[in-house]
Image (tube, rainbow, N blue to C red; front, top):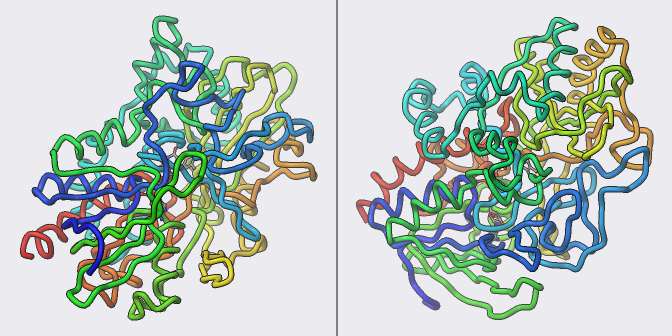
Length: 504
Ligand code: FDA
């Protein structure tokens, strides 16, 4: 058997990975985390760690020659994007045939680029999606554990009501209310007290300087500041960055052998390493973990993997849309990049929607109200291994998003009608388009719990091999997903450490 041996390897450093590493470290298990992205803690030439959204540079994107922002146009002009040098930047857009998926790259995974919205799903929907998981235990133990370790906090409602920075959200709330819809405050891992000090001018601005999808220089408690800091604090966990796992095989003694490519931040191959371990945890995200297992199954390095690997994928019903407000109803030149409110119409049986009221922090008045709608779309996609390209392709068609568009349209038609407003057609590319149905932020599934794995993420067909991340969730969870991914990982790893790791 080849390579360096470590008892446990965790692939990735996102939510599922970070939970697993912390709990393994606490259990005294020497654990190596392998992350293909960078550690984001060094300031660049401009003194900032991350480049902002308004002037993105190479740090913004994962090996692109031009940035690929979700709001690609304004009045059909591509004003937001910039030409850049290919580099190991923090946000990736993985473009499949009919669906693009945004993911974070770096120590902390999606936590580096996401909106920080920390939402515990409605219990009835959690039970519908994952009926085999004991919901009573989840809501009594693992959701609270996830929320506190992630340091989820709530906005001060008095401040929300009077600050210029959330005028856009108050405008949208009133318009929703005119249509008989109610809104709810959304908890976050962004430190709301820090944001108030940003508004007061006493600390450097981040959320109030349009920072989010290319990283927050301040204010956000991303995983490197919560779970991963605690994991490193156990003294048992090590993180190797710019290390991408390529192949996984099982050796005769049951241990796993990984081939890993180490690159520099410009993409130059520095070394190909072999690393072996007894317990292997996949936390490379819905796309990453599924691709690794598909490749292993299809190239015969893990031939006993189930045919369920690759199935049950969905974009959590993500649809973005925008409305044009009347001239007398501006949304404000000041907009916090961190959403604070959601329109909650999930109990509407015909078209359940949870729509976050998103900012459009352009620094000038746009009269735009922007939304990310999470809908309940029963359609599912499948990953298949493309041998020629050695990658996973996603079988998902644009028509499969029609139910999600219909649900979002039903909600926003009501809001438009009640406020005599219309959609914006200029924001999602060069064509006339009111609904962005071709990208998502919430990839879920590919190695579904209880199908590709047992009820605790143990991969079917192999011992000591686990999936820990968003690929366990079958395509939909009804709210922003990272709290659920975290809580489920807490539940699963507790069982695995007790039954598999401690006894070996
Ligand atoms: P995650 O994707 O976080 O981590 C996987 C890690 O593995 C990455 O760091 C990746 O680089 C690494 N990796 C992949 N393949 C590898 C390989 N072969 N070798 C080594 N490393 C590898 N959710 C939410 O709840 N609230 C929100 O507000 C938002 N907002 C939001 C905005 C944007 C712009 C995005 C892109 C996403 C969100 N999300 C969100 C979604 C949320 O970020 C996402 O669901 C989680 O990050 C998924 O967590 P995972 O643990 O599944 O993987």
